[in-house]
Length: 350
Length: 223
Picture 1 (cartoon, rainbow over the protein chains, first blue to last red):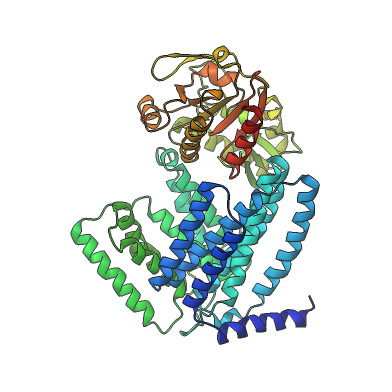
Picture 2: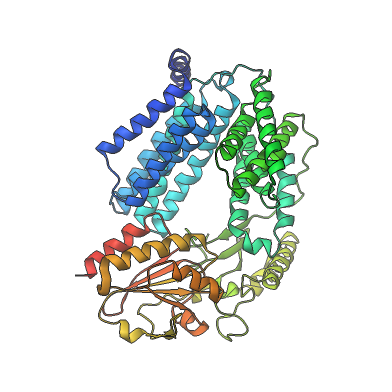
């Protein structure tokens, strides 16, 4: 697409956002649209169907509670999952997969360019963070789908190809969402120093028995840090910040202790105070709001011990890390003189 | 890179383009010095000493490569994972299930057999086992399902089995049984054999389309 047309497309997307419905209405419409599409194109697998329905419910419930960011996080999951499930049921051989991959790759390249050209300066930073994170997964999913089709089965490749499409669709939806920034924009900067510090802490924590007992949590944490570094290197600072804070949350869960009744009461007040602080902030602190919404949701109703711990990590570690990351960088990162590339090839899906 | 090195089994570790560890180094489940078979330098993997040994070796190899001594690393790790084995037939194993009843491979002949290697500490295994229970209910006596636990405490295996389909044959795999199925270096690993005991499919891990893949195969074989 010529550059002028790209800019025009981005302007049109944003103009629609300003003139259109409010974000909650848009979210409800999006789930309705997905639900309608499922009536025409049903999911045969019972578990996949149930998972899809649960995610749609979560989007609706979060929207009803006015937790727009939480609703968006569920919607991202829904798009990704649905994209994969819908694709993987289609039968095709390797040549058909290659042709399809090339077509999807072309479509997504165009879509990604359009979404990146959106005037994000006027959108809430939290929305931008979610869109950048989705965009950041498209490339790995696309290349991964090829690898899985070759070394696994075509159906595996199609699943990941569908997920890439789902992530792209979600980013496009974010670009059309009417979530305009009201506070001052926070200055975007690289958070590489913070990421390297956290990576060092994670490496130090990876010792038996914890490295064995909590192996899957370490995998999730390292994957999140890797994603944050890739987004940071690409200049997607909002997405990098979001992923970094999620890594802080995952790291914090290692040592999170249980809460007694008095601590629970204090935590509830603290989360309430954080909400007030963010709402009245003159800055666009919407990336922090993503996590505060999660904390609110965790402790609403009959929270279990794990949920209280998780909310406590958000209030006690994630939000302070956010405000620290908003400050100017504490130091520069000196690249090492020599590096090696370490590659671990493992069985997929284990 | 894995293709270039002829790596067929995982995990494999590369520093730059030098293969420094392959499945034989990590051994297979239930292998180790005490079993006398299949033991690798870092087996058993779920063990603090093995992990320390791997960390130290890796640091040493990185230092060597940074010092320009790839030749030394290559010499020490000349063998690739070419020795990776995949069984072609249902092995002739004999083992006791968790209730003490014998399971003999020859008694399973005449119907398709699904063998699942799993572990109590493996989250994807849980959902696969649930689904295998459903599968067993669906096909009944026309299908044999054997769930072999590796590197898992006996009590935990009993607890997991106790909550699931009792018609699955639940057992704790010993070293020889595990080794008879080839290089089991990941859980879950699922084998599907036809009525004649011929291997039809091996699935490493729990891919998203696992159910569809296996049901497609079984529907063709079970009448």
